[in-house]
Image 1: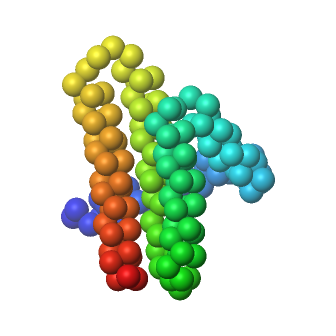
Image 2: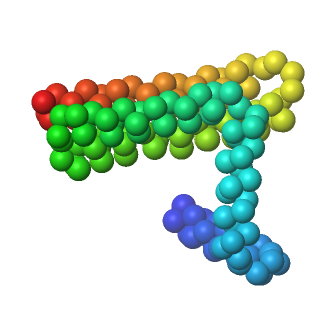
Length: 143
């Protein structure tokens, strides 16, 4: 019986999405790209942590390129080093959006708002640990 209820909920969900798509404006990938760019610019303007992460990304990219050229590493090592930097920017964007929604939903100090912000911050920390492990592994294997 649970399967039928789940199937019914799935159909309702699909109909809701179809109706919302039908009512929305015509799909325009350039408009979506503009919204993405606007979000990136807002993050750069309003969030210091995001700006610091962007500076660290650029520094890491330059460092990876310099190390690869100095030690004459192949493109694979350079790719691992630089590709490992992208999750830092991605997770920082997600954390910034979590903080913005939390601040809007709960302007007063609350346990749940603090929990959401702390978990977002933990995601950023774990991403940085991941990057460090990638860099240590790539450098040890390349040397």
